[in-house]
Length: 275
Image (cartoon, rainbow, N blue to C red):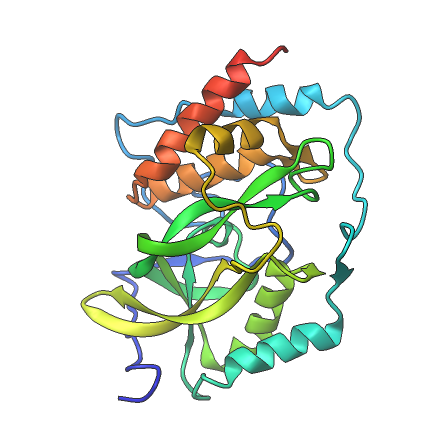
């Protein structure tokens, strides 16, 4: 086998199909099953966090939060930066093979480009964590938000998304443009080996950059919930991202106990706050 292990064979019985989309992590509520062909929400298990909580946070913002541009100490990615990052990732990709992406968050419902197929997968050695501070998009200077990435340890259930070989370089550039706005960035793309369908294959995913000044390791779940419950930015409340993630994972039959506890705590924090 080569450095990427062998290619993964997808088929329509095992995989959902996704309609492509462009742009950064979306604002607004994403309807389960809207862009994602997936099973219904797990029977008998509904999150405590709801759209009503999201709306309550939004109403607290007296005026729309403007996009203030790059946070202090950062600068926008340039076209050359995006191309360089794409090309670095493609160095490990044997041309002619489909490119695989391990999705565990907003890529589940809003991919950066057309995705041919997807299938369930597990990544060992990394776990979901709301672990880096944001003051743009779903946070602001007054109430910083907290965004999700992968931290070392444990394992993570998600999906593999297949990008057709002929479109892979273009799709990967759209993907890095979606995931990065400013540099230095708080998370970074790496190649990982993922288990799916009894096979072990290589895929690209995004993990926390532990050298980032925005990385906040060691926060308790209560501390994380307080930040998520209070934050709202130009793209809406931070809790909306958490709710979208939980709903779409559940729709795929993936129950993440950490996110489930966190959404319950966030709902409680929002309910305790003054209207």
